[in-house]
Length: 456
Image 1 (cartoon, rainbow, N blue to C red):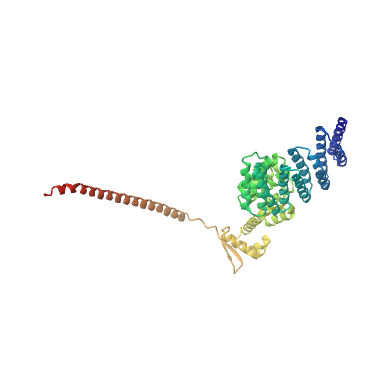
Image 2 (image 1 turned 60 degrees about the vertical axis):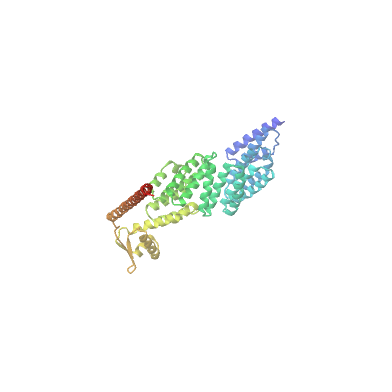
């Protein structure tokens, strides 16, 4: 009877797989559910049940049926308890990943993850509970519940350090770094990332996790305006994500690479990257958005930049990392645009410049004043006429630098002569002291002979 039931179940599984391949999801779901209702008395039937469970999860994922998938996760716990702890964790991760792939399911994920953590505590599945808590931290981070995430991180780190679970320590420290970065606490973010790297040095890190650390390193270096180093980390992260076929993360990282090149004012490199294999592989509106920004930057056009922001608002303004650097990029573009407008003139009216860049005269005057003080341009603002009077860039007088160098060298020579004079004076004093000492010794040696010559 068991053999017949197994054969029938395997036939249904094949039919369900075929239906899922042909995107007949209703038929596939029905067949998978029939498999899950069958009893299982041996390892073969257990494996069949497992295949039906994962197959049904994928079908519900493709149909975006989040509520049914949550119900499936809760109902399958009794079945999962029959497996070894590592196997249970793997199957639970598969089910949770399927739910995570459904759009706008973050709130449901948080609820079912909390519920699963409670179940794992009751079953005394420590490894599974820690894995679920790490996932919950990531979900809390996504939903901007930063304080709850930090509280959970603190308890997790205490527990993981006692168990010396290096790999999960890396994951939790990395999440901690991301939370602190979003809270704008860059010092703690860097410290957490350093802790993640330290823990990762003593254990094998999967390529995907290493790529995430490289990505976070690049983000933090970009915060410090060290875009050269940031680009290097982004490049390493992109290679890691590409090798693991993590399309979304790879596309995001490529966007950050291009942003770093724009901030470095290396427009030619941006064009080269946009013609490369990665741009073709990860083409989409994200790259189109960065391409539009790069073109505006190359043309030194503030209007084009604002147009790109308007056209690609979802792709640019919704990304916190990109948004943080756009203030600096806007300032850079404004300077470039102003320089472009005033280049042909020796004297230019500020209202004319304001009209060209689309800003008020007061804003333009304030920015031009700052540029004069920063020596980006050379000139003065004539308040009486409302004009900017430009001067040629002053040539550096080499004689001044030469005079400073001569004085520096003379100072060195004087210091050396002084040291030599002090040394020679010290040696002279030492010689005189030794001579006086010798004279006293000679006088003492002659004194007894003088006394002996005196008659009694």
